Length: 538
Image 1 (cartoon, one colour):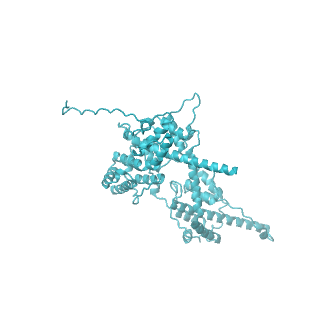
Image 2 (cartoon, helix red, strand yellow):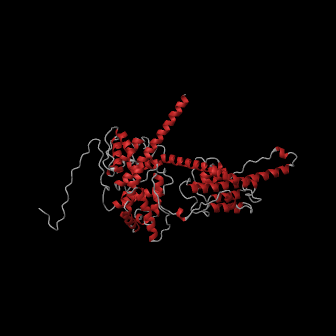
Image 3 (cartoon, rainbow, N blue to C red):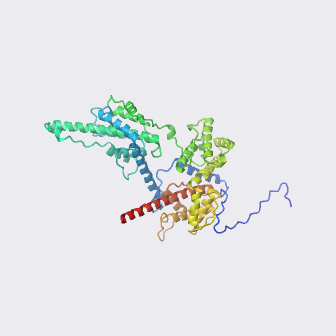
């Protein structure tokens, strides 16, 4: 019988679930686990965590890892490796042919006396003057000052943390330390002891002043070139509350306070080709991090954070993201907001977001983002994550090779389902070896046991062993601590998880990339060890 005009439409009959055949990939479930009132809020929380991971990474990620993880903190080791790479980049830059020739000409001006300290200053022995020089250099961020001081001083700082007080002590000890100067015995022959002592004091003062002038100017030039070349660490070059935020102004202030009146440091630096241009602006100090899930549409409406996120994604994931012009900051008017957002949307489309290839869709998405449309913001960010970021982290060919290796079978693998389908197949294959069933990317991963199974498969010693009689921490907490110790895994598996399968796929893509990188590093270390042992045996 047909239903009446006012009767509600009959619900379609539920189809019986198909049982997966042996070796077949699990089917991808709908994008969201639950479409309740809080599902959109959970998705915003996941996106806020991911965007902040990109544009405002945590400075110390192993604090949580030390709570539960007994194995070596990979994040700490990765930070040390990045620190060594930054140090080597500064040393290579300091000793490059072009900069070395120009610095040699600058050193000649110091030796000839064109750049000398004012009489009767003793920059090496006067504690107050050295403290003032350290305060001037303290305007530079400790993360930037440390590698520059290590390169100029010729010695590593050691295992001390990169804190302003520790870096200040290192600069005082290794960069500004006066050299040991002795008068030759030939010059002392026939000289009155008092005159010989006065000569020694004069030579020591001149040598100390020349050393401080040379090294301080080298430090400023190196910081300027590192900032221009993009070889420095992440973050601002100068402290946010510093009184000086320009390398040129720092050199002029040093010259005004300590050098002779005849010295024109700006002219001399320009004459040897060492012009200083690095300057920290308000755009560099702008806080691009997202504050809360509720404010996500409003904070993306001006386009500044979108453009910053795209630049950070291009550097972190190795994808080509090209912005067509400069970002207008602050974007006070609607036209400025439309300019920034339209530039970000066009860059997303050029990077490979399929839903934004049509110019009309780009225009409509731009207007929606400027008008604080929350659903448009979610759709735009998820499309970029799914179409660009996940394939870059977990390429389909690499996923297929790993699935074949884990399953140990030459089964036909169909990659037509996309990166999300392959990530589900990979997670299911790995967890099956640990006796954990994974059928989707939301409910199956909710309690954290499947994620811990993946970690245990690749890094058996990462998760701690629970003592006999002690209560085992929840699997989700264990995984959160282990992921923090690994590093390069954003906190997408937080308290509000699961939000949707796209968030789970993005988190699994980061986890897959990190585990594969660690495996490659361990294989390289094993190869080096075998080669060394074979060499020693011969």
